[in-house]
Image (cartoon, rainbow, N blue to C red; front, side):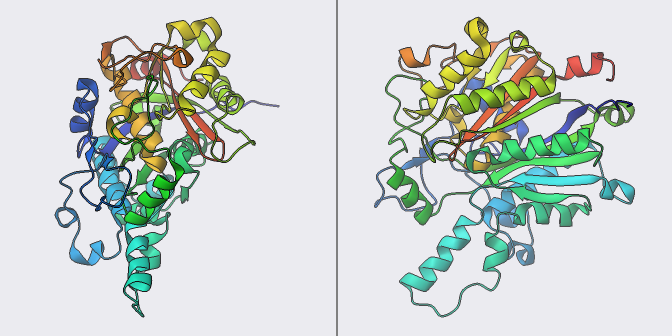
Length: 416
């Protein structure tokens, strides 16, 4: 049997809108400077809530991005996704027509869908006794709307769908796009995640779980009190490497592996074996030895349970090499964007490799013996990074890990 070489997949475009900025330059500048997007929530009245802080996208004006007729179809989460997709495509220098359109995919990750729209519908029905709701409520609420709007606006005709696996959604979307391209089912993919969870009903639901911090997010720090919710979107343009090199595209990095697993044990309590299996699977898929990894962008939620479990999983996978790993959680600055989290963190990982700067774990107060790893506390660090992982672990025990290697490494290596 003839073994067909697997295609190599690189990232040639990045688009992002987040609590740290409305584009890549603003977002990355804040990350490496340790500036936080966490502040008092302004888009929802929080007097009846036990927490009052979140990581919102401030200053976003939909009318500057969309005509009135289009806004009617777009919940906030879909607006974010379209803005990020436009940026990513412009950054990549690609356009889509003819066969290129048919050989391009769109895969988004989104957990909650149109929460603002859903909340408005329920207020109208149950609080105001309305007999009618907005006629476009369903198209605005559905989590797949972002993928559909991206494909329609850009004329993309290839595989297009949404992945909803709670907080691992974006990593699952990027990983599936990677496999799709590697297996020659497409040549280009737009992949990432989007989320806009700031509605009163959603915040009340999170309040009931008792996992939201009353002040800020302190991943891996002793005394941490929970997550801080965030929002935003990030979209990557993934492209077959030889194609990208031939057209002289900028290469941010190479997606080299993807690993998934299920804890199969509990809906909310984090596990150790499941995350470890996902990291091992990503390493195996990439062909990396654990000792090659320089940096991990951690799931790092800042909850009492997740951070020690992730620490133990990392130690299980990396053994003594865990002492040499740099690990940080950028959720300490942009909050936990749920279905979009993995995409925001993939951007952080790629930029860390490109610029040789590890973004810090901010708000760190005191070492926790249960989280005894180098978490790059409170200050960015210069480092040469060639091989990295980005972790996402979701409620329901749904784990997704992406392996990257640097753009310089991707350019220097011969094709498989």
